[in-house]
Image (tube, rainbow, N blue to C red; front, side, top):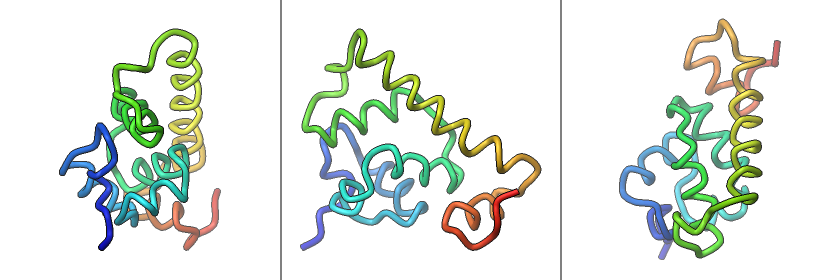
Amino acid sequence: MIDPVSSIRNLGPASDREYARAGIHSADELRALGPDEAYRRVLAAGTRPHFIGYYAMVMGVQGRPWNDCQGKEKIELRQKFDAIKASLTDHDKGRSELETALNAIGVIKRR
């Protein structure tokens, strides 16, 4: 049996849909990609960036409650979150949502 993305702590049924749209269909796939790459793919697939959603997922992958993220760790995760967003917006400016998604999976060249 395949464990859905929502089987990861802090993630629910909406996460199953968002991650599936990004080509991530199981908790094992998300863990194998790592939280940063998984979230980058979710954003590239059209989900709006949300810092709490990002760090709740990171905490969940670690088996921790979402509100366990505090202080220096939260500041560092915010920097990673901002870098993930910037990596997409810098090279995908002027592209449609479809082109951005195709670029995320390597179908079209980066500008």
